[in-house]
Image (cartoon, rainbow, N blue to C red):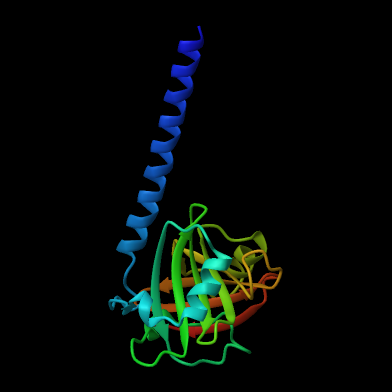
Length: 195
């Protein structure tokens, strides 16, 4: 009887390990196929050795377990007043002032933004759903007849547990595309025409 119980335990652990591995592989594959910016241009990945040690040390202290990690350089921007509004089409390899680290953790995709001294600017978390107040603001606003893109972002000022957050949504109509940024209460902060 003990052998059967032991065998079932091993079988259950093996099945769990396979499921976890498949989920992590799916996240990595999804991240690797998403290697273009909003305009369809390839993103300019940085080698980890080109990212300041201060940035990588603080990142790994904040996120010790990740399923993949990609590094990008970013030019200087006003992250004091516009901490949520970085534009992935501006990634640079030469003399970056800011660094974006894309990674997977807890079955989700993230982008952590750090300045060159290691200060965390923001954390972007991909989400497929929006709070009702944001959905309501879109459906009752100027973009009510526009199509929402599938992936949206929940953007936190310091950590992904922070109460200060902004929601980023892309809307499309014909050849026109806008990126909208909403406060958690549904107030539109920024409307940026992309195409």
